[in-house]
Length: 553
Image (cartoon, rainbow, N blue to C red; front, top):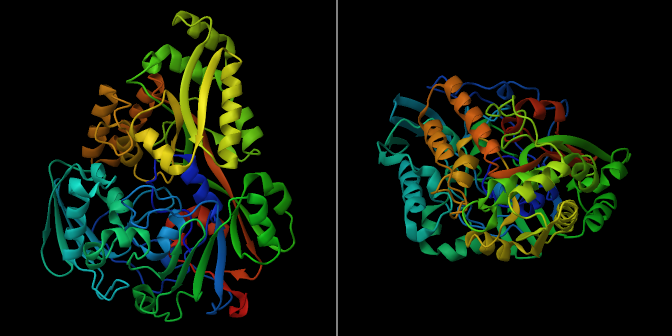
């Protein structure tokens, strides 16, 4: 089973290096499951979804074969709460979440959970589905949830996801399957958080026995596949989980239909595509530069997809010259976003006017993208005392695509008198620079934007996992905390609209584009319906099967 670009939002912030690894590992290597029953829900925001009633396919799924895909970078850490994680699609093969999201990016669908019930403004009760086991044979219980949340919140474990649990007070075990979550204040983002990285369930036995081994080579989740071999920089090999709970619960014992998945690390996009066209790979997130090549290939099924990732530039507003808003404004006006999308993304991208994608419920529709205006940029530089030029430092990822973006942006800035001394860095070095806030302007953005609090807190709250002291906007912080508390969805939406406006006017970051990707698969890969995916996104990909025609590659 391979699950489509969904789940996680973490990596978050980071960088497009991780984002590109995700896109190229199979923009959507899909959920290979079919769901036979309906979900129970005791909360008005958790309800039976249309995907539980969809016709999965006119063809009967067949078991067999090893699905082969490729990524531009190795997955990195196998514990989702430790950084870096560069391939969330692979992460979804062995770890599963408590809750998943629908087509509007709202956490409406229980997954490992059977029920989510809001007791009061500061209390939630969740109930697990029965008879779910981890890949090491231990049971998923209420104690597991409590232990995992306690582990994330323990500072010595350095979980980058800890800040998202800030509003949480206590986790109480009621019985074997039931947990009560008490919060310090009303917490509107609760379901969105457990539908994200903190909600990935890990075997506490495996994690406690050897945390380093867990994240390096031996994760134990509840998912459809088990990590068989992890070879950093080379490949990730997975085998079918014969005891997968979902197969049993749905009455489809042949699920997952593939006997295994092999994710090869192939940095060169031309080599990845050559392998796909030669039949050595079965499914691939195709590099944007290759869309024109594959779109009419008779051997392939090709889909263009709007994704919930934003690409942007990170400013250090607290240290260095870019504390001056006029210089941040000058940079924003010096960048021709349409030209960047055309020249570096081959037209696959939507000009961004804010942090949240245009089809996300939290995006402010009144915002406009920063205007490309080099004359205004030069004026702002002069007003700030840099009429003769400005030098700044920063970084971008060292992938082929990252280098193209960095060079294009550097050139645009150079035309107005800004010398951007940009380093192209590998993920570990990039993460170190970000952690030390050792830059003026650098690669930013956020992939997998689901609950709006996650990127907001991650990027702009002092406790955020990717702030590191580079942003401290009191008005934005107040709105972030208000958005966490507001449980009325309409009022909460208005808070995030205001947050986007405040961030835009303060030029906290420069938003460039919202991602689009290209998914290609060989014609013997069955079970994908792109139109249904557009309607329900994650809920579709977690509940619909992929398989090989006749069970053969």
